[in-house]
Length: 141
Image (cartoon, rainbow, N blue to C red):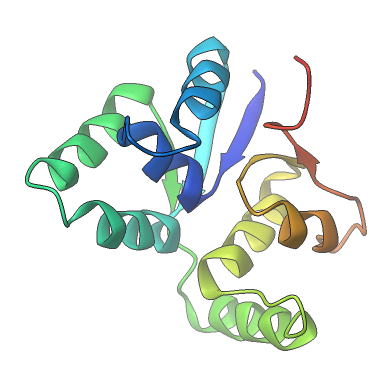
């Protein structure tokens, strides 16, 4: 089964029809037939952004459940250290905690495909394998 990682921006854009990226993200995600994966940090960040609308939190929860998205918790002490080290390494980009957890998840699951609006960051970030991420919103198929 094909797996894609998903970042905060596309989740928020998918849920908000007024978002400038909504159409592009929705078309891409609606055509995808594999499994989406993300981290608890990404879900937390997305929940913050959608909480300004009355049905935002409910729509986010339904999207996660209905899409079958796998949500991984990467907040154990060793993972926190690894995330902090990545954030220091990429401080010039910069990298936030949610991004760091996605890089750690990419390493753990050996996935390099990601749905993100953070082209600059995920064009720069590398998992331990030094393999570049494939930015799925930039791909033709």
